[in-house]
Image (cartoon, rainbow, N blue to C red):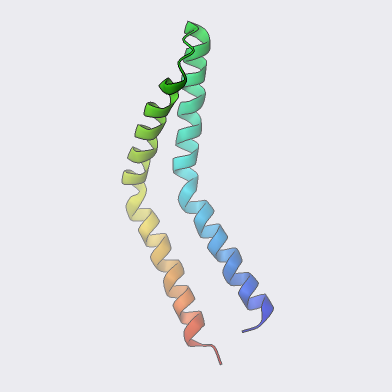
Length: 88
């Protein structure tokens, strides 16, 4: 296996990782902004207020997108196994 092939595999792996984690991270970011805005408007400065909503939203998004995540991981793993099988 040559260096460009290894770089392609690593690039594909990073791309799959970013694709899979984009939705939960975006959801957590959106909820964090909303909670921060709520805290600013009401002047409630409780530090633990941000954790529970973010945790619930990220968990729900992961549960909802789990079939997509598993399909992408399976596709990447099959591609990787095909690459390993063709190593000379």
